[in-house]
Image 1 (cartoon, one colour):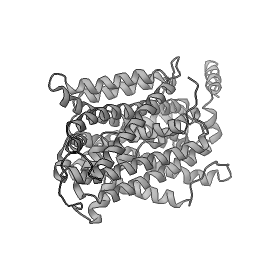
Image 2 (cartoon, one colour; image 1 turned 90 degrees about the vertical axis):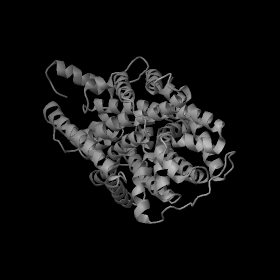
Image 3 (tube, helix red, strand yellow; image 1 turned 135 degrees about the vertical axis):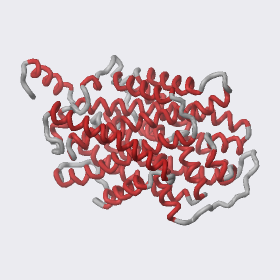
Image 4 (cartoon, one colour; image 1 turned 180 degrees about the vertical axis):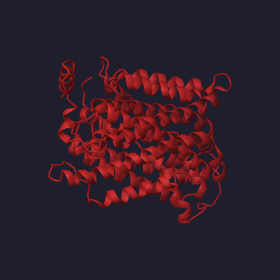
Length: 469
């Protein structure tokens, strides 16, 4: 199980996180609002997230092969308080929302197939439990699953999108206008909707320690993952135009099924069932695998309780995996099923993620000034243009997180409550548990030292003697 992850495995992890059937809800929402001009919003959102991962790639070049990824960079740049807030919010909490959203989409399709004989929650909870077991077997087992699943997903969605875009399906094409609105005031706010297509490519970073040639493969695999997803979604919009009426697309709880059936008949439904299974496996597997590694890395830096870094015989951080699995199952068991509920979860998740991307850009700016002479195997081009533009785009999307004003306010309210709770926890943890400055960045040499098992062994030995490291 010591095989190194190659470029294919890295892209599989990135694409696996990006490709999800819950993306169809966002795609259907955007396309039904303005028609094919939605591709403009897709391109802008893709560029914004490419800028974010380029900043993350530079941070990884300063401190490579760290399990906490963005957490370590933020600790060095902005200090422990901001690190805990953005990381726990942007990755742990947001993915607790993202995983059930994908499970709900899978459960909806399976419920249509099984009828009322089996509750939909059984399907979503069942697949989560299986993936928890797979991830408890270690990162290499998870990566093998991811490569198979992501390959099938990419091939399937490419075929489904191309067949639809060229009108080559067996179903009857729809005669409708390609453009509902060409007004930029209607198109640009939809970048926040398209943002959901492109979150998670940086989940490749925590796997860098297990990758071949991470200096090259980390930034390249993140950009390629985003590019692949962007092309698929753009072509899919034109497929929607040919086979699904815009109004029906926006109202459907399972727009991917509506599209597949309209284009390919009953075989489209069967194909989409398989796609839904693989998509749920792909997204939830990526979340469990990468978030558990991130939380493990944060625990090494004392930003989370020490038991988060405990590993089993397979090297899997089992405590975090079990927590993620449990919380995901709880939300899935609550019975989320409608497109509106899934949309609310994904947009709330997106808002947290936008905040973490802004933090990454700020970290690059701070560390360029603090450590300008430190060698970097990768630097973002045109510094600081990408960082400045990236921050502005993320802020714009946060302000337009939903085109529905009521939903937007509900998202803001929920995020405010969660952020307030994180601020209180972070303040007391840093001030009274760690007893260090709230906003002062920790030296990079110290952050990197925390990655070593010897550091923690020595620290525990000194603690038993009443001494500090």
